[in-house]
Image (cartoon, rainbow, N blue to C red; front, side, top):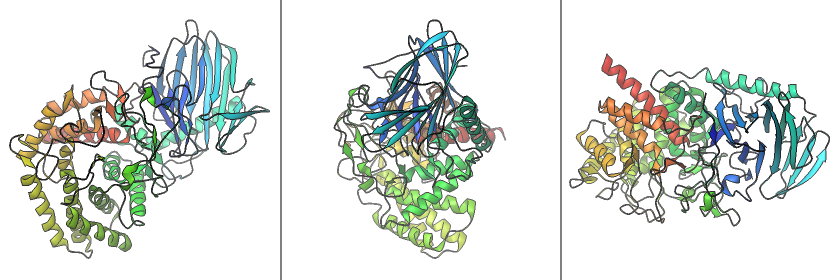
Length: 603
């Protein structure tokens, strides 16, 4: 059991790591260790926030259930579920809050596109002592409150409505209830219409149906390797970021959590990135979550079939997100301005998208047979574009906001597009210039080995023709552009570790002074890059180094097993949007890679 810990606030904000995630396949909420729901967008992930205390402690709004005199708390998940338990302790009392976005009774998370109910359940029980319990509901932007039998209705300024039902009458949006040991309070907050009168057993039935649904789904997870509990929780976390309706997966459920405190690197991640698809599918397939992998692949292939030129990211409907804008009201987490909604990377040119899409199709075909003719026609166009455009400047995997450059990673993923296109055509007898694509893939591979090599740094570099060091080069072996034991990949691995190392196994993506990205200031260490380092070390048979690094990265997860995008190397604090799909994908993949290398070396 996780020990109780005192509450900590900096600049009036709780640490990012002091949160748990709940979700229902349509949206998600962050539950703080102090009993506040301080992030929730409704009705879905990319909707405007209903509560966003994380982005403005004074004006963002929250749904708080907490005892007066709170001293310390702890959180845990109920095994193999998305049901979160928060225990809050005062000097002489203990309160337990069980939170969930409930699932419909009988919902099958493997197939059901409408599993969620559009509700938030908070089941409160006083375990010991007597408490004065605060129940405060403050939607972002304010709301009119109308009492009704069994609860309250909230009319928000943007027209959305909330309906709170309570088993104990509330005084209004701010209430204080005196409860003794053994007493319970059940709260259901809904946004899909009016609520029926609530009874304790009704809420308990909702929670039990939710537990059953999650555990039925988690039964498919198959993993035997290091850190099994964390890998299993990472798979569940990815499912919590899955939009059940169509298989899209958001990069993170939050927006504008900063990559450096006080800095401007604050982005909206509540969208689905195409490049996440191949990594996600690869990771999920390997641990038994093949239905989620199939759903994400189907979503990707569906949305790119509608676009003349594939985009880097899409909203959950497969459309271009709203234009990026800066919020005029919210101050940002710990005064990290600006708060941004929307993401301008959606209109950038990034050539790696061709390789991501074709690799997704390749994985699809490997597991599910040949490809639909219409999809193949579109893929051929992408393969040909990769053949034509691989030397042209773009904005790269890290979505820099400078003029484009000929990034090595982008060229490498064009190589992936040509290589996988040739393999698909040859294996399934599909039309296309398979021989020419294979020759083109080899041309790009040679160019990377020769033109991106810097003998002074003894490493590949971020650009064809030279440049700074970029941790995305570690992914070249994972995408089979170069083998991990190629002499120049071994040298690059060591150079990245040495020059981009942030200490204790952490890596920066690049150094902005050497690799300008168009933004001021610095950022934290990027967790996915360290998992890529684990993979390269393992594939180079440096298993002791790889295992030690993997364990150290896993130890950085919060007590719930959740990981952010970045880590502040000086403090260990979480940075960036949270929890981050890429980080959990990296953890899963590295665990599988380590277990397979260990098995090979034992054989």
